[in-house]
Image (cartoon, rainbow, N blue to C red; front, side, top):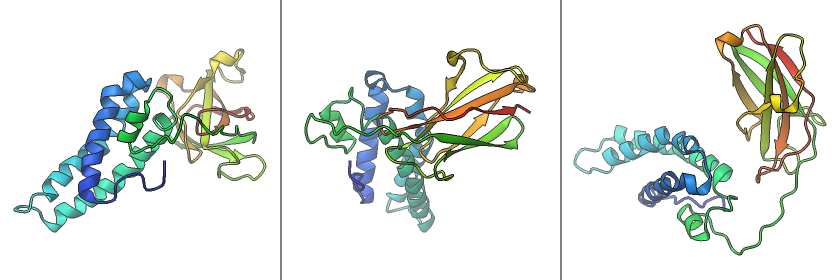
Length: 222
């Protein structure tokens, strides 16, 4: 999928996004994609469609309408690209014909093997509000959030335990959402106040293959 696989002109983009977004909605189950991931893009999509309809009317469109359309598109495009990269581009359940609807061309049946990251991640936790923390995933070799070789981002794994108690089993850890920029937000329930959050990260390539676990960091939920 090239950098400019999405049509540039407003008219062609509008036609493309309406067809492609409906394709994603109608086929989420067949693709094995959580429908909530599609619907997460819906607010930006609906904003653009509404703004474009106003801006496209030559009898009533104003400069403000056109500005809103352009701003809505700037908000929609990165959200849509992120969705495609995470759930459609490398999804074996999506046929070549459907991929082309999304603007993605599969040149042949062979896939170039993607390397699996071998960097060890570190997690830096910062409290940013009540029961809310930011987690920055850092490459232990560089101390930076920049993705290391073969990594497209990172996943967090979180286990909640009583204070000063380590998780007894690996299945106590639950995977949180993937973050391409290695910045995660953790939110906890009020009833978890005083509990301990045990957090570690793993880098992942674009196909979802994960590297080694990093060290577990702990924070008291408050």
